[in-house]
Image (cartoon, rainbow, N blue to C red; front, side):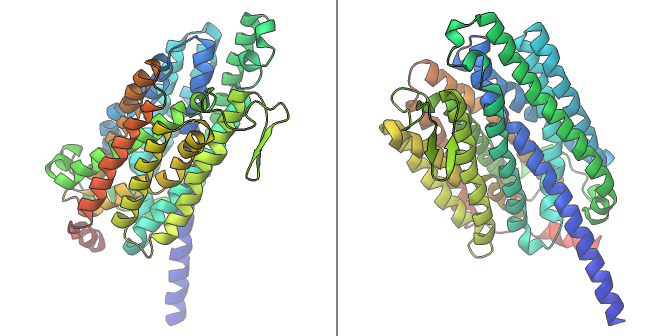
Length: 450
């Protein structure tokens, strides 16, 4: 009997592990796709001759989808379940990727924004479904560490996305050293074709992911929490002060993270910031990474391998630290460190300013998953309602970058970092308050009874 029980437990654990791995692939995918927009910004800025404010509409179109699709996304998960909702979202993302060749063929920046809006809508549904899934696929006591581990693989995607995107979209064409001596129209055509290549590659990746998740769907369904157990809408979360406070935290965090990443490539290539070797024709080496290509391409690769790589390493370290240190305490430390680095960027120039900006990624690492799980633990609203409100708050990635872009367009690129500095200070206040707030455990008891 004991042998049979042990075998059953092993099978259950193995099924739960496969389900968790499957869901974690979604984190990688949306990290890769979301951060592919970072090199897209300088690409469209050059191709369509845009201001910072106009170029940052790429982030606006993508992240405003969170404000529009979070409510329908939560309803879709409630009605269709986790796996079907995920497949619908992935199919919409494939459609979005196929709009890019149309947009570049007719050379309409507006269609690029439409494609990004559809892409953002699909990722919104993925986040509504996958964040609570990752937290629930295992013991409650390790929910923080598990979600941070998934976010670590999300960070692997955020490293590879801007690196590959920069290598493709910011090389050749209008970004070639000899572009001024070439036919500008031919160079523009070449740069537009590189955007097509990037997003067709993404479409192929999503199709492969759909097939993998179809194979794993039965295991995900076996281990997923029951979506029918909670009938509340997202508006129920507005009755909980901690759900609202957490939504504010997510809003300012995503806004700060997106703002910094969006402006980084242009910031690093400024004459008063230019890092050593950025213009060296032989390429430059930082730590064990070697960066080659034109300055914009190198800056894009630095964004991937230094800023986003720091976030990835921080999440693996954070996943381990959160088994020993409270999420509130670690979040407060990281937020205050990020505030300090933003102030350094504001007040300095040259390599110090550049490396300070790149270092912010390390301290961003645990913020999103920590804010998310801290809020779920303290919100008196149902988990689905709270998760929906938190995903809705990701719309901060559309709004705060517009503020940063306007400051940059006014000629104050360093001062633009004051906007994320304020955002990180708000997160520090959230962390300090959560350390004294009681946990709400009634949902865990409800889940155990089903």
